[in-house]
Length: 429
Image (tube, one colour):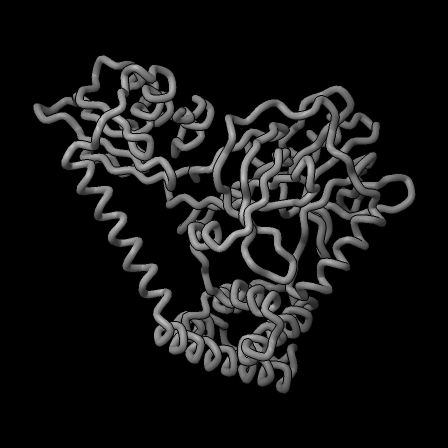
């Protein structure tokens, strides 16, 4: 039986509140004709202000959208309205074979995906890229050594790093380019540390064939190699579990909105990070409610400290999770766990962590979480100040369970549980 998305899931895809409102007006059968679904795609024609109805199609797996309307929002109100119709009134979107215009769009998407896969699988293409990445990494090592040789305080010969970042882009090492761009914004006291870690990564990128397979995969990811989710699922193995949604966080820049969703397996205890992306004005497709359980298969991306995963087959809709908070660690256990993870992946900035029985404390020099024995600073730059006061209000001086990311810069809270209450999100408005 086909799994219908919930209304909450559909509305989470909307780029803004006006799009949600407009979609609601198109969620009834009246404006639609020629609707249908084959289980992998939806389509229909929506009556608009002109004589010709707008043709709307949605590929569900990605998801991907196409509409003949002139809207620059993505997905547009017609795509959202069709999804709401399919979700709330299944009989209005009957099973059918795709119309010609839908089949043509789906085939064009499949053809493009196959061409990308063929290009990535070509050994000569892979060899040329590896050579370019190694050459770019070698140049970066020289640039870093030159800056250190002149002294970090000597700015007379040090220009902005943008030129070097552009060279890394040319070398197809986008991950190195991102790290290089961040150097210009760093305070003086952190420069040597970041130079050292970046030099280590560049060195590893020039000696990839000498590294253990898991560490080589980690270096490739951090340098900028990407692996398609379909490839990860096909390579396997997959892990089936009932996954508790610990929390989510959206971050955005001028190019992309990134949604991070953290899970913990009820049986395996494994943690996983799911990533979803949206273009400007487009919400990421993935929407899983915090505190719910999702029975599904996950496949982990390769690496020395596997965490990122891709979502495979789901077995039913998300269900409410346990009444109480998840099991948590002491602050000392969290610090030790991060240390173990860094031994596997030296560039690991932070790892998902649940702290149990901690109290938020506001001091003149910032926010802290304490379990009565040890204290960890809160990385306030990762969460709005209002959310930290909300955390304090939820606590009212009593211990909480708090999920977030712990690393060398402190703890970034994402979700909080107090006794007998639902989880409270601390990141997104």
